[in-house]
Image 1 (cartoon, helix red, strand yellow):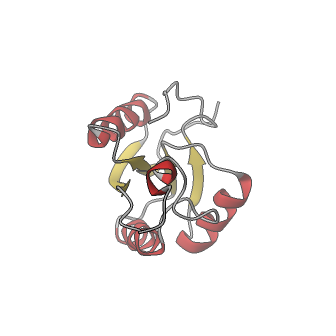
Image 2 (image 1 turned 60 degrees about the vertical axis):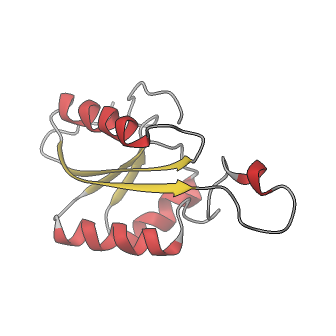
Length: 127
Protein backbone atom coordinates (compact mmCIF):
# COMPACT_ATOMS: atom_id res chain seq x y z
CA UNK A 1 0.00 0.00 0.00
CA UNK A 2 1.52 3.30 -1.10
CA UNK A 3 1.97 5.93 1.59
CA UNK A 4 0.30 9.29 1.11
CA UNK A 5 1.75 11.06 4.15
CA UNK A 6 3.28 14.36 3.12
CA UNK A 7 1.94 14.14 -0.44
CA UNK A 8 0.13 17.14 -1.99
CA UNK A 9 -2.75 15.49 -3.82
CA UNK A 10 -5.29 16.52 -6.43
CA UNK A 11 -8.27 14.19 -6.70
CA UNK A 12 -9.97 13.87 -10.07
CA UNK A 13 -12.64 11.89 -11.82
CA UNK A 14 -14.70 11.46 -14.96
CA UNK A 15 -18.38 10.87 -14.30
CA UNK A 16 -21.33 10.19 -16.55
CA UNK A 17 -24.33 12.51 -16.37
CA UNK A 18 -26.11 9.45 -14.95
CA UNK A 19 -24.18 9.91 -11.68
CA UNK A 20 -26.35 12.19 -9.52
CA UNK A 21 -23.72 13.70 -7.18
CA UNK A 22 -20.14 13.33 -8.46
CA UNK A 23 -18.90 16.07 -6.13
CA UNK A 24 -19.83 13.85 -3.17
CA UNK A 25 -17.86 10.97 -4.69
CA UNK A 26 -14.77 13.16 -5.07
CA UNK A 27 -15.23 14.23 -1.47
CA UNK A 28 -15.26 10.55 -0.42
CA UNK A 29 -11.99 10.09 -2.30
CA UNK A 30 -10.58 13.24 -0.66
CA UNK A 31 -11.55 11.85 2.74
CA UNK A 32 -9.73 8.61 1.98
CA UNK A 33 -6.59 10.56 0.97
CA UNK A 34 -6.77 12.63 4.17
CA UNK A 35 -7.29 9.48 6.26
CA UNK A 36 -3.94 8.27 4.89
CA UNK A 37 -2.29 11.61 5.84
CA UNK A 38 -2.24 13.11 2.36
CA UNK A 39 -3.05 16.80 1.85
CA UNK A 40 -5.77 17.44 -0.73
CA UNK A 41 -4.87 20.62 -2.61
CA UNK A 42 -7.55 20.47 -5.32
CA UNK A 43 -10.31 18.59 -7.07
CA UNK A 44 -11.03 18.29 -10.79
CA UNK A 45 -14.33 16.97 -12.07
CA UNK A 46 -15.04 16.06 -15.70
CA UNK A 47 -18.67 15.35 -16.62
CA UNK A 48 -19.67 13.37 -19.64
CA UNK A 49 -23.14 14.58 -20.55
CA UNK A 50 -25.77 13.49 -22.97
CA UNK A 51 -24.49 13.44 -26.51
CA UNK A 52 -25.77 16.17 -28.81
CA UNK A 53 -24.62 14.21 -31.82
CA UNK A 54 -27.12 13.36 -34.49
CA UNK A 55 -25.60 9.90 -34.76
CA UNK A 56 -27.36 7.14 -32.81
CA UNK A 57 -25.71 5.62 -29.76
CA UNK A 58 -24.42 8.74 -28.02
CA UNK A 59 -26.04 7.81 -24.72
CA UNK A 60 -24.25 4.46 -24.87
CA UNK A 61 -20.92 6.31 -24.74
CA UNK A 62 -21.65 8.19 -21.50
CA UNK A 63 -19.71 5.68 -19.39
CA UNK A 64 -16.70 5.63 -21.73
CA UNK A 65 -13.55 7.80 -21.47
CA UNK A 66 -13.53 11.08 -23.37
CA UNK A 67 -10.04 10.18 -24.57
CA UNK A 68 -8.48 6.73 -24.67
CA UNK A 69 -5.10 8.42 -24.15
CA UNK A 70 -5.91 10.48 -21.03
CA UNK A 71 -9.46 9.53 -19.93
CA UNK A 72 -10.33 13.26 -19.78
CA UNK A 73 -10.86 15.83 -22.50
CA UNK A 74 -7.87 17.92 -23.61
CA UNK A 75 -9.14 21.13 -21.97
CA UNK A 76 -9.63 19.38 -18.65
CA UNK A 77 -6.11 17.92 -18.86
CA UNK A 78 -4.72 21.45 -19.38
CA UNK A 79 -6.77 22.63 -16.37
CA UNK A 80 -5.41 19.74 -14.31
CA UNK A 81 -1.81 20.52 -15.30
CA UNK A 82 -2.24 24.21 -14.42
CA UNK A 83 -3.76 23.33 -11.06
CA UNK A 84 -0.97 20.87 -10.33
CA UNK A 85 1.63 23.59 -10.99
CA UNK A 86 -0.14 26.34 -9.04
CA UNK A 87 -0.91 24.06 -6.05
CA UNK A 88 2.55 22.43 -6.07
CA UNK A 89 0.86 19.03 -6.23
CA UNK A 90 3.01 15.94 -6.46
CA UNK A 91 0.27 13.33 -6.92
CA UNK A 92 -2.97 13.06 -8.90
CA UNK A 93 -5.42 10.43 -7.67
CA UNK A 94 -8.26 9.42 -9.99
CA UNK A 95 -11.57 7.97 -8.94
CA UNK A 96 -11.65 6.03 -12.22
CA UNK A 97 -9.45 3.04 -13.03
CA UNK A 98 -6.61 4.04 -15.34
CA UNK A 99 -4.74 1.96 -17.87
CA UNK A 100 -0.93 2.04 -17.72
CA UNK A 101 -0.98 4.07 -20.96
CA UNK A 102 -3.40 6.64 -19.49
CA UNK A 103 -1.23 6.96 -16.36
CA UNK A 104 1.90 7.50 -18.42
CA UNK A 105 0.19 10.04 -20.69
CA UNK A 106 -1.24 11.99 -17.76
CA UNK A 107 2.11 11.98 -15.96
CA UNK A 108 3.81 13.34 -19.08
CA UNK A 109 1.17 16.03 -19.64
CA UNK A 110 0.88 17.17 -16.01
CA UNK A 111 4.40 16.59 -14.72
CA UNK A 112 3.24 14.78 -11.56
CA UNK A 113 2.81 11.19 -10.39
CA UNK A 114 -0.62 9.72 -11.29
CA UNK A 115 -2.46 6.86 -9.58
CA UNK A 116 -6.02 5.63 -9.40
CA UNK A 117 -7.92 4.89 -6.20
CA UNK A 118 -7.82 1.15 -6.77
CA UNK A 119 -4.04 1.01 -7.22
CA UNK A 120 -3.66 2.87 -3.91
CA UNK A 121 -5.87 0.41 -2.11
CA UNK A 122 -8.62 2.93 -1.50
CA UNK A 123 -11.78 0.85 -1.25
CA UNK A 124 -14.08 2.86 -3.47
CA UNK A 125 -16.84 1.71 -5.80
CA UNK A 126 -16.87 2.96 -9.37
CA UNK A 127 -18.88 6.04 -10.27
